[in-house]
Length: 201
Image 1 (cartoon, rainbow, N blue to C red):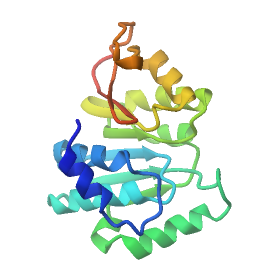
Image 2: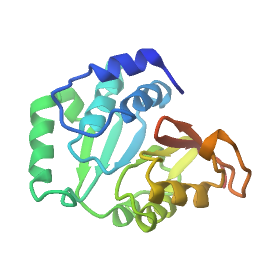
Image 3: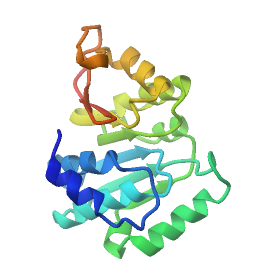
């Protein structure tokens, strides 16, 4: 999934926006191209919203004004003003067309997952709490919500808690560049983003 053009474009994209999305934007660049029109997607752990706004911009650019990006976050883990900062960023930095695609959901991830039917989502991206227990819970909560052929992914594979939970759940270790087969089918890496196309696991 490496794309030097996408990396150049995303590095220079709206640099004034707050966020932790350097590795995420090139991945979103690719995903936006392959998502079906009117896709429904969930981003767990939206923070300041830079990556969500980027995805919205990409989808609007390709003519998709019916997609929905559900941004799931408590907006309270790092600072008490994160929710306000997210809303200000959305109003200031996203166009009205982009904002129409973004649906913030301010609740715990596992509670929100229950709002979605099985196999109803084209793309789920996990970037919430990075401790092992939280990542494992998110993996269990959201995997079944992605339809066949959809993309299940997440950020910060270089964090120990993320790494361990992903390997336990999806089954293939790619540490050190060597693949070790385990039950579960595996996953792929794009920088610190792990991802897998959904099947019937």
